[in-house]
Length: 568
Image (cartoon, rainbow, N blue to C red; front, side, top):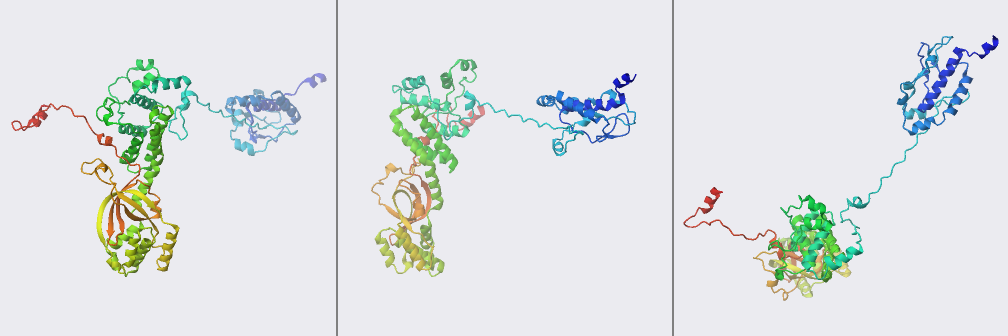
């Protein structure tokens, strides 16, 4: 009888052990769970805390330790699969046997999985972990594994070149195969082919190899038009709708079917290989006219547009040189490239000169002798201008005769303007002020009590010229005898002279004093040294005449136009 009693496990004392064991299994399955501090009993009204551990705590420790050893790795396995606490939301702890009240009136500790799971990770990190008597952690946290970011696979082939336009700063055309090089040399750009055919093929291939936006397309079409090549869109050709022909064609055939750049056969506005007597090949001249006339006409002065246009033309010329499309014009193409390199910088300097001219010295001379201020030289401000004027002239590299006349004129009011004219000039020579001239001007102005009133000036030598514009009532440069014209000297400050170069043209109003000194009163236009007007510019809006079948008004039928309009 006693032996039987020793082998029987008391049901009431075993209930807490089963509850804690079931609770520990769910904790290991779900992950790290913070055990609640106070949990009400399900089957009773008396709350039971974690501190109210039953007398069989040693058995609980052994059971929980055994469970941890047997279920090690469950938390990691579920963690890797992305299992969350919601998976066990419907599981309640412990088993139905745990819901029975103990004999002492205390209810066992009951936990539902939905109450036990708290997703707030920050609170978990700050709370201390609870342990049972022998130090075993019940809510030991497992650090979540960091997922490795998948590196994006690099695109290959045509997809990698999708956003490449061909106009990047360090862009280079892909190398061609030996077979393609042989084909270009022997067939495409063979010297036996006419230049018009070679350049047409080169332009079509170049456009197909570049991704041009709308602005570059407009610029390139204007460049080709100036060179006598028709680049207008083709209408009613039907190739866009002929999908079968496009699908069966190779790259060369597709390029030919979709091309819009053709040499010849487009009317009198463009170059005709059958009538070449009025045309000649000039890559440099087209680059000059395009960058100095066409682009400023469209954009006025826009530094970004000037740079974009110059880079576009240079990019095309590089393509021509690389593929050796016209070796007989290689020097001309390289000269055109040099124009593209200097054009944006030169155009910016000309824009600055338009706003800075005529300069300090010429402004003083204009106020003294054109506006009559010389008669009020007894005033301090006007007297300071007169001193600056005389010191600048006497220290400049002007002709000594002019300096002598200025010194001999004791009364400054006797100096007056004897001639005023509007003239177009071309810069022939530039003489910059020397260091001695600069020091003399500064010392003399300081002695006179007017420091900083004037600046040392150099000399710019000009000859009469013409800025071609295409109007019939304006003489052209070839109609005037300009070689025998006398050179004229004008004074300008050093910071203005550095922006000039030989060949620059300016249209200005100039005055001459009775002592032989000339000064610039007003500047109306400044053109870069590479400025060039081309006859093709006059053909921009030209339309070939067509026969008119309408009867003109006459004495017998004065209302012929009105009658025709009514019929229409």
